Length: 213
Image 1 (cartoon, rainbow, N blue to C red):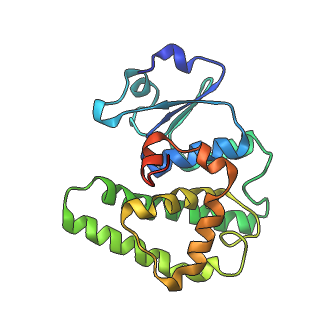
Image 2: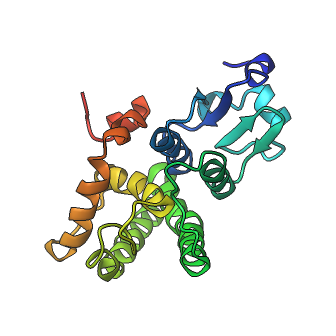
């Protein structure tokens, strides 16, 4: 895997999980901003590399290293990248809109991403079934939020859309089948996944989620 010298390079380095949505949204963020970034895929089955453990006391992914700065909270990472590379801006400057976006980002991270983790990795069939049902219900409840604006609660593509796009990509692999009444979500999914840089953000494992050649 990698060694400590790798993270001492001048280029930004991301330790990334090739399957998890938290890492994927950072990679997608980098592509949207055209940020030079060394992506180090970590195979969790083989254990974490020693240099990552030295950098991040929690041993979590994603972990971003920018010279002397080490970040390992996914929401902090994407907001840092948005401010560090301000063009194009992906967070509103309006305090009310920004607060709403941050609250939604936190909800996605704390409530939705753990459901994906359960569906992907839990061996308890009952818990997987419950997580799948819960995830689908949460999406259906959000249909009105996708109906009236170009993106999620906004006419501009934002950090929230990045965090949702990585979930939209995973729906078939997670066994989430949206009903016809969810057409606003389906249309939204097609829009965010058709962005040119989205395919560039995918790891090999993520490509396999949809059998993309």
